Image (tube, rainbow, N blue to C red; front, side, top):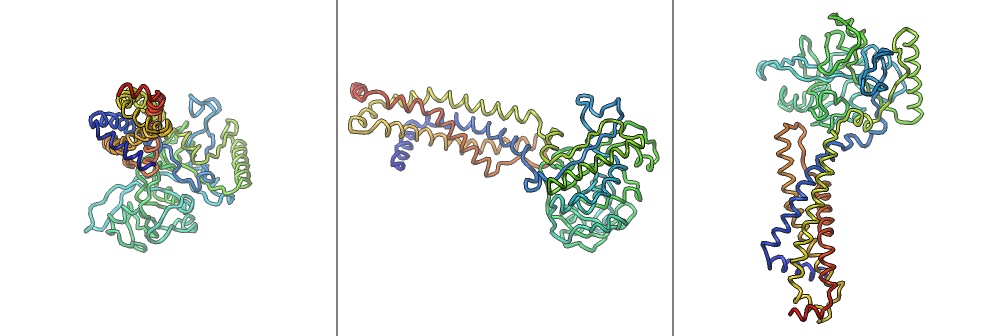
Amino acid sequence: MLTYHLWIAFKSLRRNPFLSALLVLGIAVGIGVSTTFVTTNYLLSRNPIPQKSDILHYVEMDNWPADDPFDNEDPKAAPNQVTYRDMVEIMKSDIPTYQSGMFKANLYVHPAKEVGRPFKAPIRMCFADFFPMFEVPFQFGSAWDRRADKVPEQVIVLSDKTNKKLFGGENSVGRWVRIEDREFKVTGVLQPWQPRPKFYDPHNGAYEETEELYMPLDFVRAMEIRTNGNTNSWDDPGEEFENFLKSEAVWLQMWVQLDTESQKQEYTRFLADYVRGQQALGRMKRPINNKLLPVMEWLKAQRVVPPQAHSLMIISLLFLAVCSVNLIGILLGKFVARAPEVGVRRALGASRRSIFLQHLIECEVIAILGAAIGILMASVALQGINRLFELQFGLELDLNMMGVAVLLALVSGLVAGIYPSWRICSIPPAVYLRAQ
């Protein structure tokens, strides 16, 4: 029976191709617009590491003066980064499964002469725990071990992009790379890795590319490496680098992995005790305001998803609803025009249910055709957004969003077709036959 209804639906569409094309285009435009903005909101707000997002925590501590909040709009907010001196001390805890302070720097890389000229590359200064904590994938070798953090050893991890640039994509484990005035031994090469958003450090852009190299953080002092990220301070550290490290400037990110609730509670007490100890030394004069933010709470606090994305998604869905409602009149006129044909079918024994179902299926066929065209429109629109805003991560449709587009189309077809289908099957057959 379904095959029969589908055959009747396609036959009806071919009978008046111009009107059918208008109906399909009406659905397609609504699906194209709504899918574009639903996909944008979905990609911007999705969980970048769902398997661990509840056990990874971003650490915040409040070292600002008592009468000078970090955020005037939210006086209770703590700084969104930590000082070097605080990072060093809390890294001494053995409570977290993994932990790493980190920051972004720009340093000169000196390739072999036959490869090219020196270039400045973004480098992630971090600890060995960075890699297992964020499940960073390796194609060659591995990360350095925790012992290398303490010396620190002159070791480094390359991104896939940098390995291709320096060594043509070969297994470069054991090779040496000169950075600034030092030689570093490659311990591992990453697979292409681009979490979206870049949740571990969204301060310079939540969708910027990941770093090209990874180096033990403790070289910060030996090489006097300054951050290329955001820095905020309420005191003046001056020009001396050592004074900068001892200052109240916040410029490092601090992440910990706490696998159990008891572990989290213990670490919370550890941070509170640390702050009380600093208060006894005359620092951290504001009330204790430590925070352990899971990944999604951290991204929400940083407003990684712009409010405009939610607003545009809602507006686009309302636009789709308007498109569906506007098609009701066209469908009603199309169906009523076939009144004599329907009257004969009713007189020959066709039930109201059969007539209703036939016309509703025709509406859904129109919706499916509109979904196919709408998906193409959305794909083109997303490519346009990528080029317009020069997005490095790229908005694109995936199977989930294509499924959502089809579902929206089916709902739209139902909204547009249910009244015209009911109307055509509710008139008595005698009225049809007189019209014949």
